[in-house]
Image (cartoon, rainbow, N blue to C red; front, top):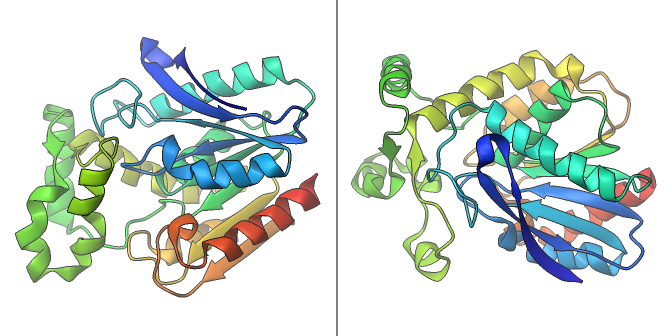
Length: 281
């Protein structure tokens, strides 16, 4: 069964979410999408899980998709965690005996990491997909200082990557960060703008996630690409090295994709994910 709904998130921001629910679920996967995305982009994964009698619940993060909030903005990264906490408490209340796994891609992966580091008692395992711990492009020191100042003085100032097209011609490393015009035309729910505050909160929490890796204590599967053009793979390895739990599964590719679930090896990635998930059940 597929259905949509809303809940009141932190500070009464209305959060939209989708659910794919079998009659007798063996487990529930709470799937958190990446930056600019929304939950509908993971329908193919949710339907795959559904065939295996695994439920999927996937919210649109505040400021993305059909949820309320300034586009591509967050006051503090903790707002994401509080929204997730509210949804998890709802899921746990309705399904107290069913194992719950958290699955986050990119921005969603960082949110999941920071969540379990601060709320360490409400999940059975974690799936990370290209977690946004550090951007591949290196932002110069002076640019970071300027960004930090703008974040404090005008936190809602929008940074629109679509305006960087000419700059990307001179610096090709920026190209992967720019949304494709065709994608924007085909999918009106894609968000193509972010604020200075959102970017500073992303970078700050990426560093904190690595520094506090020892707080991560759940069975873990991490899927990423060694040539990811957006997230630096060294940050993922640093995080994995800092996590001391013995149950660490790793699936790595080497083909230059950021999104395993929309890459040409997506079937292999999904198969590996299912093998790990079934082993945890």
